[in-house]
Image (cartoon, rainbow, N blue to C red; front, side, top):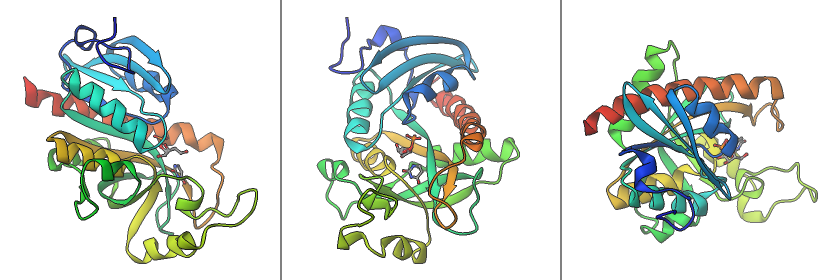
Length: 255
Ligand SMILES: O=P(O)(O)O[C@H]1O[C@H](CO)[C@@H](O)[C@H]1O
Ligand SMILES: O=c1cc[nH]c(=O)[nH]1
């Protein structure tokens, strides 16, 4: 029987895992776990699909968060209740800088807090920053795999359409507050948009947990709005390989 409200998991099922990989997409959990040794399906409840695998003999739990901060906060809280202390998000993202290409990897050091859930853990003045060890481990894994990632700031929005200033909506309109916001973030050297890192980083820093994020660029907003299906999978797999290697290294900190 589940020992937490939502995830359908128990401490025994996690086999002492201290490190979790937390993708957004539930289907990604299996693809991540299958890059590890002895992958085992654990549970699937709502947006939370979980697997367990091993890297270098260390258990790593994979649990999807679904989209957005509120469900991230539930996933992280309940995994922490079960003993997890380090969280690596492996995501997809939309680049907003013209020089960042589809297929590139981004490692996020800090997030613009365009979410609501992070404010339930710390005031807006509190920064949404990644853990240094997690960022280092992700960067080292990328380099080890021959990938040169971009490293920097991500805008992390509660909404996919207005918060990321998308006009390909059914009204074609956006609330005035967000008009011109994409250009503003470009000018402020923000790399990309996604929807979970602000909550993840803020809550983890506030609660004394470690968090980091790597994301694969599936669209460049200066060029197109809709990703090319053919490139989504290969880009995601690049990010997954980096995230899994980094998770294995970070798990050694608990041995
Ligand atoms: O692919 P994931 O990890 O879900 O990440 C991105 O994709 C979703 C939006 O399409 C949001 O969750 C965003 O953060
Ligand atoms: O543009 C994008 C692509 C993926 N995920 C997002 O949140 N935005």
